[in-house]
Amino acid sequence: MRLAKAYEPKKYETDIYSLWEKNGAFKPTMRPSTGVGGTKRTFSLAAPPPNANANLHIGYALTVAIEDAIVRYRRMKGDKTLFIPGADHAGFETWVVYEKELAKKGKSRFDYSREELYRQVWDFVEKNKHNLESQMRAMGASVDWERFVYTLDNRVVSTTYDSFQKMWEEGLIYRGKRIVNYCTFHGTGFADIEVVHEREKTKLWHIAYPLVEGDGPSTSLGVKEVIIATTRPETKLGQSALMVHPKDKRYQHLVGKKVNQPLVPDSPIPIIADEYVEMDFGTGVVTVTPGHDPNDFEVAQRHKLPAIELITTEGKMSDNVPPPFRGLPVQKARTSILAALEEGGYLREVKDYVHSVAKCYRCGTPIEPLLREQWFISMQPLADKAIKALRAGKINFLPESKKDQTIRYLQEVKDWNISRQIAWGIPVPAFVNVDDGGDWIFNSDVSQEAIKVGDKTYHRDPDVFDTWFSSGHWPLVTLDFPKGEDFKQFYPLSLMETGGEILYQWVARMIMLGLYLTNKVPFSDVYIHGYVLAQDGAKMSKSLGNVIDPFELIERYGSDALRAGLLTGRRPAVNQGYHPAKIKAARNFANKLWNIARYIEGKIGDEPINRGD
Image 1 (cartoon, rainbow, N blue to C red):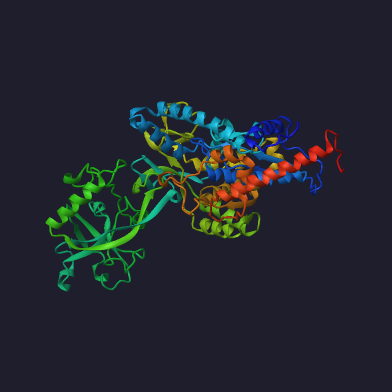
Image 2 (image 1 turned 60 degrees about the horizontal axis):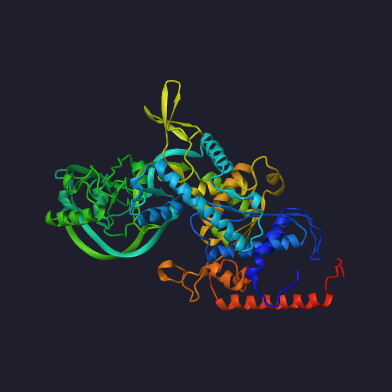
């Protein structure tokens, strides 16, 4: 082939990629040394699977650029190099995207059965999954397409189920009723690290709780009421207790006494002492609301107090509150409750206040801490093993500071809620006895709604797994764990390269699950890259109109120019802006290489060149 005078990459890149693929250039074969330094060893990398619900973005173009540069370098060194592609069904992320698609048609998830929704989302994702493959090819990713893994493939589901069963049988997975982070808009719970926190201006309402008359000698001390401060008056319609610090001298004489709850007739509650209380917050007296606060739930467990559920999964007041407020949406209930408190003479003071509000990371709806029965993983035993491996230097991090961050996260890790109340995802393979809610059994045949075991009938749990639970097995499923030849040759992976925003959600969990299932770390090295920001340093956002389409850049400059431009000046874990000048400079450099090749071609003609000449 004679090179054309003009460098027009879009005319050649697709054909060159096809030629490489046809000749097995992306296969993990040992290659002769090319002079760069043949090491004759293996190298393996499984690309983070992009979400199969939308086109690839500029951030994933950076992922491809970094990983493909490393992989091609290892091949040049003669290493037996494996580069595995994939796609993520992306559970809740895809669920949110598809709900928006339904909204465009004037529909919602409530218009369909779970089975219908699953089929619709499956078709939607299948279409996008094929788009991802063509887009990765356009980016020039030199992956082995025959090893492509989708997170709903049978082997992924099977490995996830085997892991769930093993952890359940060994007591690491349990079914428990605990406080979970719940989005009332999307109708599902979340793990703690999936919740975002935003500072907001609000009010701090001071509410009086009258002491029960005749309850001990307190009145002789002149005390007739106890005042609490709260940002959530809607949760004050069914307390389990008031609580003070045991060393707070202001209230020590009140411990053991009872108070009446404003707006809740004939429901006196005790005043207890617990070191959880911060003496300098508000008045130093706080309510115990076990049904809507994880810390209060722990306090209630210690003091054997009941947990009253005041808010429903729809974000409305439950039947456990006084009749005037039942069924009201939370914000409307707050207004009504404050009016009733003022009318009843219970509202003492209102102050401006700034605090952190937990919100759904996708829709911004305030998270409701709700008491829900879910599947949890007991994380501390897994975390302890991971911490030991990291401190022993089993995994190298670049930058190294990310290892310290991971260890700190593991030291404070909480039990992981892996249940999601959506239709899209890997179904939980557990069935409950219809006559005994505490009798659960494992069964991987989730195509059945109910099964019979002897004379007992069991119904399938309608929930699906948190997608991070299945994705946490990525180094295993991409290598066909436990008996595949790739697993024997390439595990642990040589490198895990990903963005810092999922260090805890993904990297830390892969380490824990890999160690648990294999007694080996899942990868030897971790490279963390930063965000691709807008040119002015702002985060890219559709709402801001500053999102860059990588495929427009490929069309204009070619994939080599895009990749080289994104890599220029890039530093590990640093968020850096997109600079079009770097893409253009890379395109100009590629043009120079093209002209050099044309010059050489003109000098040597069609004569073959021998290695070493």
